[in-house]
Amino acid sequence: MIHQTAIISPDAVIGKNVTIEAYAIIKDHVTIGDNVWIGPHAVIDSFVTLGDGCRIFQFAAIGAVPQDLKFGGEESCVKIGNNVTIREFATIHRGTQLGGGITQVGDQCLVMAYAHIAHDCHVGKQVVLANNATLAGHITIGDYAIIGGLVAIHQFVKIGDYAFIGGTSAVSKDVPPYVIAAGDRAVLHGLNRVGLKRHGFSEQALSALKKTYRILFRYGLTTTEAISRIRAEVELCPEVENFISFIQSSTRGVIR
Image (cartoon, rainbow, N blue to C red; front, side, top):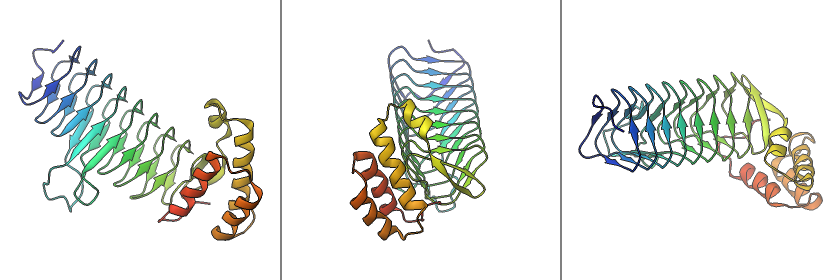
């Protein structure tokens, strides 16, 4: 059902069983999947793709040009996965040429009210951004991460899979997978054991991650020394390998 007051570009591609409520605006070069609901006064700007089953609540704005002084009007886009919920007044901006031109949100994410995803961010699947969470440009968020309310994350920061960032935190360095971080500036508060158990992590994996965490952050070793010790002393399950790979690939440095 499309309300008679909705404004929809003839260039937009609308899937099956889509509801577009009163006064919503759908601009040029937009593709909307099947079974999507777009609430009243929502704005889907140009060069946006919405996957199947998305729910876009009232006054959300997706696809506006980036808040970046280097942006020169180049073509760029926003890609939203399947079954994503974007709540009231949330904003998601298009990418820039410098960042690859794409801002992306993975499947089954929840973007709560007033959250902001800036240009060139890449958000994994089943991520939760709580109210007023703010991502600056070029941020990468791993799968299943939870970003608490009023969190601010610096440009180019990477957040690992299954990480939990406590509310009102300011994050200026990379946050490894599987951990809890909180504070201004954010520091580590141990493994996200509750979250990992909820996601079905085995006791074997939890034990290996606990040993890995201690060696990296509690023994006073350099990163090279810690990784060598982990490889010698810890059972190298995929979760530990992911942890090590994240640490080694960090360019901003990792919080401690």
